[in-house]
Length: 224
Image 1 (spheres, rainbow, N blue to C red):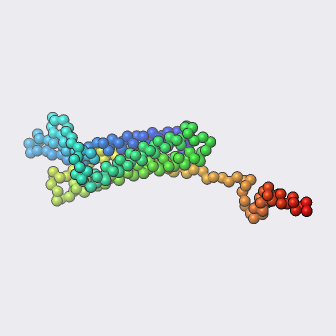
Image 2 (image 1 turned 135 degrees about the vertical axis):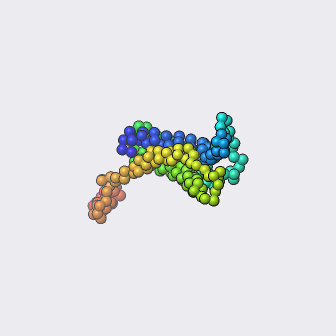
Image 3 (image 1 turned 30 degrees about the horizontal axis):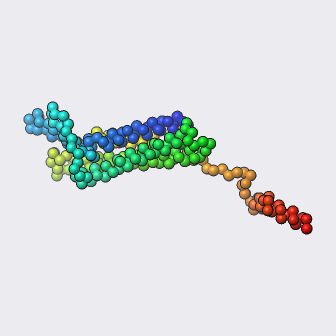
């Protein structure tokens, strides 16, 4: 990165994105279904998440139940569970690796190229975590919107976007902004030593003549 301030800012944004991704993964509010009775008094809200479903009625605390089997989940939520777990693993590992490449740390000393390479690897992992968050929340949101406008479904089968999806989109944005500077900071190219640089065939011959073996042979030929 250009300076330590930008590195620290990217690290902070990545941390916020990871917290948001973890919150979105654990929240049951991926899909929300609201039921209103004819007398408007009976009200029940159901939530579907990656790990459990919950329901809450008027004046009653929310009650949740963990899914009995992974197969009980819809296809989009099954994929979302795996991708969100991958995003947390990639983002957490990328965050730890980026600590090694920071200018304010002394894990790698006197090697700016190695530090930048570490940051590029960490930034790439953070961007991959961003993609792993963006795919499931967008997929689930697309399914909800498609079913909501499906005329073949009754009102009880229509769902709305839950809070976890909005948190997931915001978390993906933080991960993208936090990982992009590190991933785009290419390490400097290795500069060859001018003393050993070979530009023309004449330079190559001169370099060969300067080797100890050639000098020894030249001395023997002069003595004879």
